[in-house]
Image 1 (tube, one colour):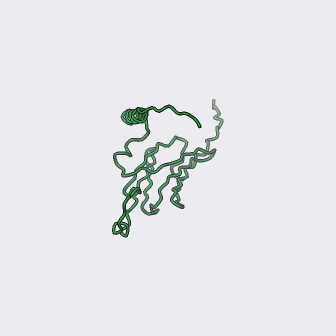
Image 2 (cartoon, rainbow, N blue to C red):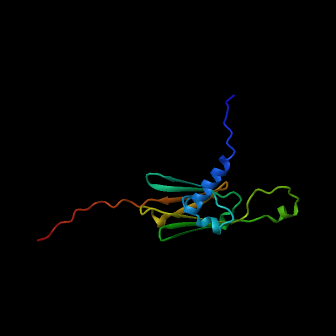
Image 3 (cartoon, rainbow, N blue to C red):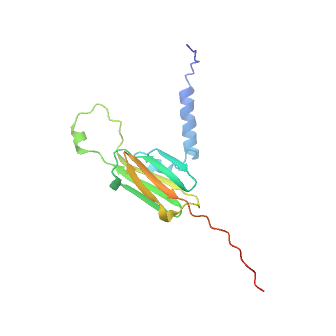
Length: 144
């Protein structure tokens, strides 16, 4: 059995640090916090020929998701709708969040905005962002 030191203020210190980071903007895109009821978790991965974004959106129908690309910024918006049948039942505790979500991502210059595709399977939204094909160097001759 390991002995752990009890620090009663550690939780308050952690909360204080997170609040300071939020105020200073170190937690990423904080605009989503003010315009969303919830924020889906995402994984972003770079591969040699593309970027992949996986967003957890369980319970969100594909037709309720909107993806836009403008000026190098990819925007995800959508809504998880509350089912009418759930409101009539007597729940003691509700933890699942309903409502709108909003996320924005600035894409690198190497992203090919014209060929972005998206699909949804088992509550995971997958966005594939191909990279632009590299421009081959060409030799320019100097005429006399």
